[in-house]
Length: 292
Image (cartoon, rainbow, N blue to C red; front, side, top):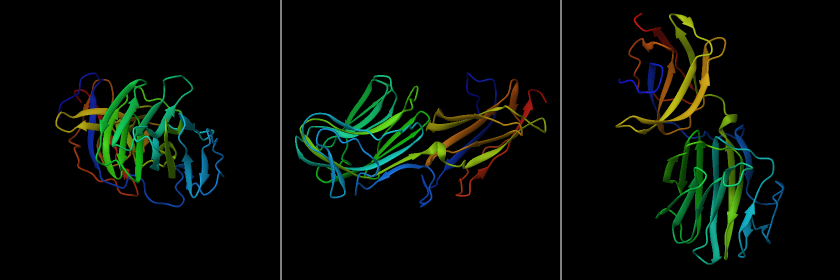
């Protein structure tokens, strides 16, 4: 396997085909930081511009831009799922979610749709991606899932991926529901997860010349193009004093996990096609000095 330029030395690369449920169903899922079926306002939503909660929905009437923000929320790596429905009014007006919204102006990301099937994704601060998707319901409810991890932004509509991009410098910040212009829209079945609260699903030790290597860099990459092996950083860590590392990797993708050391080299052929079980995966990395 060829070395990639720009690093001190690739000492081991593991290709992981992670085919597992993106998040296991569990009533005790510690990653859920907000869940709302809008039967009431127990979550304390700041309802603006005549927005209201009724009949199991958060209803935003026509009449200008409206942003509904939950308090005290910070999200960098996680997922947002919500059902969104156009009710009436101008079909060209957009509604959707804002996420990773820091205090700085123009720092947020957003994903908006309209009832004609159009969508727009804003990321990298000011970059807008506008397309049309047949997966967006022109009448009725569209179920939206935004997956955020490292540089990855993946958006699914009604169970189908409509866009996947990689952000240069992922911000972290708040989350909001948004409706713009002269249309009435409703939100329901909201769930927000913070992946940084999940237990690792891949871990191991880094060995150097048969000894455990503390403070060694370990990087996980998501494969963008499996033909050219173009990758994007998905997580970074360092081994602890016992030479141990761990990651949580979000699913249904291919990954490289790599550790490097100056003048290092691959110490053995550790190329593997692996499935991460629900119980997690243990992978030890063995390094050796160049020429050893």
